[in-house]
Image (tube, rainbow, N blue to C red; front, side):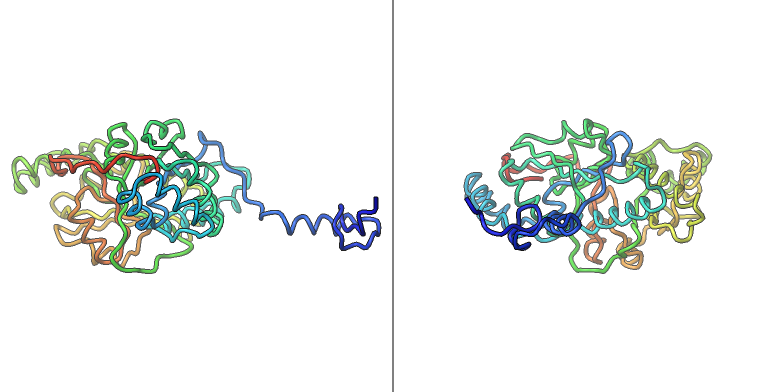
Length: 363
């Protein structure tokens, strides 16, 4: 039976002529999705686990879940699965990670010492199509998904070799910190501030973020005067590590790969220590602690108790980590994506009531 004229590998455009293999290859290359780089092995990568509600804005979806329940939520997501979700607070950070990866692949084509993004969510698997469509819409390189259908994803973080977990769910973040995993609750800024496209900027508070809360315990128990005396006495004794020390260490490892190519001034990663400490009375111990770890930040900003928000507005980091909600709120107001690290003595003793537990609502 005559099936009509055939084009390259069976397409009708060739009018029955023998296939031209170069044309056929071009034809199918154009049909196929653009090739993305290969994912690094988890044990070699710096793994950033991010929840769906940190990566995308899902306020309407969350409202439907809370007011109408799981089934209505899933139905809504299925009906809208071809509509991409809007970028959420962690989106610029993820974009910047990918920009760093692009530079690393240019300099070290065979290296797997790269950032690897994992979408970690308690969404039901049926919602996955919309998440995949949204990721492809923005051409993000996120190959690893973990959708737990209502169960907490925290138990999977270590299996994914997670170096940092970002979520909008404070309960999940506290759970991860309790498991010894660097984690923070991400908040959207109150206004839009443009961030760099080609340089990842990460700002850290010191105590109870990079360092332990040892010094904050002194302040809480004995006041500032005793704190200053304590820091002077123990200036040469390194502070114990805080929950995000390992993430700064990972950033420093990648920075050194650029430095070894003579690109210190053009490095696409820049780190900041933004601390309420005073340089004269307590700054030396912070810097000496970093030195004892073999680490550094590109900039160290000692504010002596002044608000951090205005300075962060000038830095324009992709993310700022702090253990105190007062500073997180101040950063938000100035347009910074701020992340709360629930660690140390500064945390309120009371816990807010957990939200309704369910599969689709994602952290």
